[in-house]
Image (cartoon, rainbow, N blue to C red; front, side, top):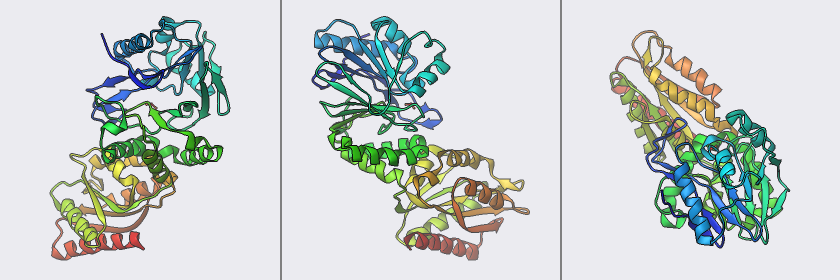
Length: 407
Ligand code: FEO
C-alpha cells in the first residue's frame, strides 16, 4: 500500500497510522483514532520514535518508506526509541527492528524493557538501553533528551524531547482519540480538540494526576516547558500551539472544576427519571451547569468526562431486589477505577432512588461512592412514584446541591 508521511519540521515526519473505523479503545467509545509514530533524521542517525497497533503494519510501513523517499535516504533506521510499551504503540517493534536494522540501538525506560518482554516474550535477546530523565542522545546535529513520565500513562511511560526543534514526543500524554485527515491542531477547532482531550484525560490519565502535577513542576523548574514549541502525542492531533492543552492538563490534574453538576440516572418505570429531571431543574435554578446522562443509552466514558470538571454529581438508580438497578454498575466500576480524588478535587454527591419494597439502593450506592472518593451529602429515597410534594423536594435538593458548590 502507499501512504504519505507528513513533514512536521525539517527532517521530522509523522509516520503513524489512522485507524478510521475503531470504535472502542480498552472499553470506551471513540470515533476512530490514530497511533502516531515519528521519524527523525539526524546528520548521523535516523530515529524511529514509537510504533503502531495490530493490523496496522502495512499503513505504517508505507509511511516510513515515504519519509525515507522524501528525504532521499537509504531505508535504514539507526535508533529505536520506545516511549511506552502498551500494544497500541509497540505491536510491530520487533518486526520493524528486524526489517530496518537488526543491529540498531534501542532506548526505553527500564520498566518499558521489562514490560515489552512480559507482553511479547521475544525481546530478551535484544540489547535495549535503559534511559531516564537526564539521559541524552546525540544523533548528529540534533539531541534527544529523555524524560521519565511514569503513570502518564503507565509506569513505563517516557517523553522524548527533540531539543533543537523544541518538539516533545509525549506518547499518551496530551493525546486525543480522534481520526482526521490532517495532522495538526491548527486544522480543527481548539474547543473540540480540548473536549476530546478531556475525555482522554478523564478516562486514561486521571489516575496519574499526582504524577502529572510533579512532572509539570519538574518541566517548569528545569526550563524545559518553555522550550516546547510543539507537542507530538501518540494519539490524535499534533499540538503546534501547546499552550491550551498544557493549561488544561494543569487544571484537570489539580482538580480545577466548573460550577457544574453531572446528573446520572437509570430508571425502570420513569420514577427515578422524574426525580432526575426535577433535581436538574433545581440545579439550573441556581444558574449552575448540568450535564445529564441516562445509563440505558449513554456510555460511562462520557459520564466520566463530565465528572472530571464537575464539582458534584447527582446519582439516581431505581431499587431492584434491595440493590441499585444493575445497569448503573458498569459506570460505578469506572468511577472507582479512575480515582478523581487523586486530582485533589473534593466532589460531593446526592443519591436518589425510587423503591417499591424496603429499599437498599441508597445504602449500597453510598458505600460505593464513598470508596470512589465522593462525599455523599444528601439522599432522596422515594416509595414508588413521586407525587408533587416529592418532586418539589427533589427540586429543592438539586438547588441545595448547586448552592453548596458555589459556597
Ligand atoms: Fe496509547 Fe497507554 O497506550
